[in-house]
Length: 130
Image (cartoon, rainbow, N blue to C red; front, side, top):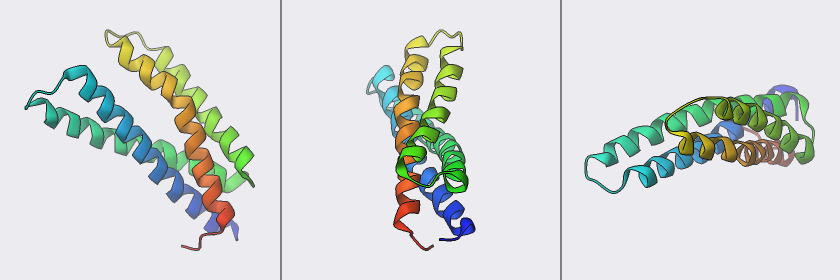
């Protein structure tokens, strides 16, 4: 598979995996912290959309790096873990009143990064022609 196709497949797979994971994480975290009130569902939907946008950008970056440099699943997971550690360090360094949410995002950043890197590497190894 040529480098352009690997980069495109990795970026697309990373963006899709990151959007699903981060969108679900942020929506579930906000839903659990706010309760089940009628007006709150709009906030949960909005937070899910923001999570999907954020996850697709970060996942796309992970997939881009995996597509450019990684050749197998091991390195894809390591690249995702590196991005996850950077994001976790950012969240753990933020002073906030909502520390339980930031702690949740910080703890979840590493496994989500690894999963996004693995998803991009698996898509590249399968040789999906898009």
